[in-house]
Image (cartoon, rainbow, N blue to C red; front, side):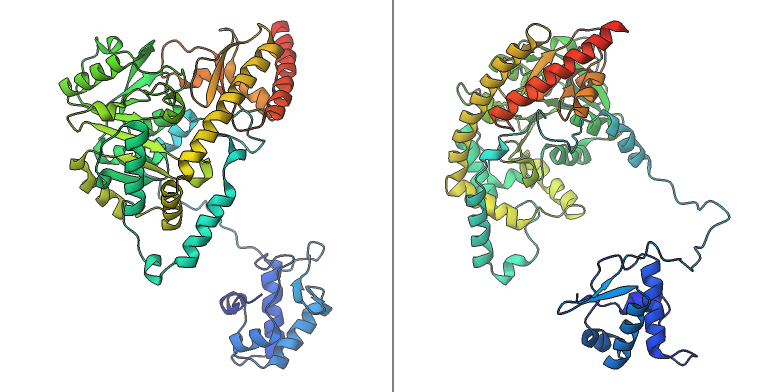
Length: 500
């Protein structure tokens, strides 16, 4: 261990000045104080005697004597050929006192904004550490080309220039932004200048940027109902007034807004490719109507093209951004859903007149995403690895979806109705209206099975009951095993529920 301990030892009483004790006793006492106060914990390797002597400005014999005392007192132990390590002191009597305060310490309160974000967190859907089946929104994690990504990363560090390790471009590397622009041109028929693309960590990061850019307190945001719970939490935390828009067979229903008189209308948030969580794909006719409605009401559309790679694979519909002639649409996408969530990489296409303001926000907050990840992602696209991976992912997703639906129907019979129409990475199963889907979800989490309660996606009014489940993140044998376990757990729960 080569950690420099000067500051730590001085703060625990060591002084090289005159005093009654010898230097080796002062040194050993400062170590004892640090160990007793858990600043040096069990198993910590102390610096070699020669190195510590140099750091502390002492003779090596002084350090050796101090270590010998610590060994005799059983505070440390020596391993031949390795060094000295801190011992377990839980059985030793601690002789130091802890300072206490007679009065409760007061600190400044958090801001009103922080309070709003703290209250909004209860709306969000969050995972747990007990496995990934059947968490919605996860891609087939087991088919990610780890070796390709590793090779590209190794290439980056092999060819790195010192200048590349300086501050990076605020809005993202030009090479990645250009490659994303080409990728979207091919897959989504989107025409945009690469300078409009901002590299972000994901969809919530995009929403946070748009919120900081456009929303003031009590500005109105039209949000689909039901909707993506995390987006709803973000808008509420930003103190926006939420205007719910119902979902019909063609997507966001403008008729449900006909009675609304907007006073401070600002944003419309929509997931048209695969409405989350219902799975409805917005029709081309409705997309054009929504653009007209936004123009009439002087509002901006935020198009979260959620799961577009899957829902637009066979019969693509032009994005709202691609239909827009008035620079009134923000388009957000992410690689977290087609590669893996831990990559934390997405993109936001902004109307040209907003790019400068977004850059100013970035430079005073996040600055930029890791250039390493950006460059590797750029190469991943450029070498056609992304295209190859997408084809494989779509195939695997379709196979696992069909297996999930068939086996779900087999093990649940008619006790739960599954809706397989969804084209993305999740499915929905309806529960009886008198059953609490939140409780069912909690019960399943206890069995290491993940699902989100459908009722939490609703803003207000009628809250339907159900479970939103992912199916693609695990292999078919695990799907089979988990569904059978889920059916048994639900059967037991239903029996107890009917007895109440």
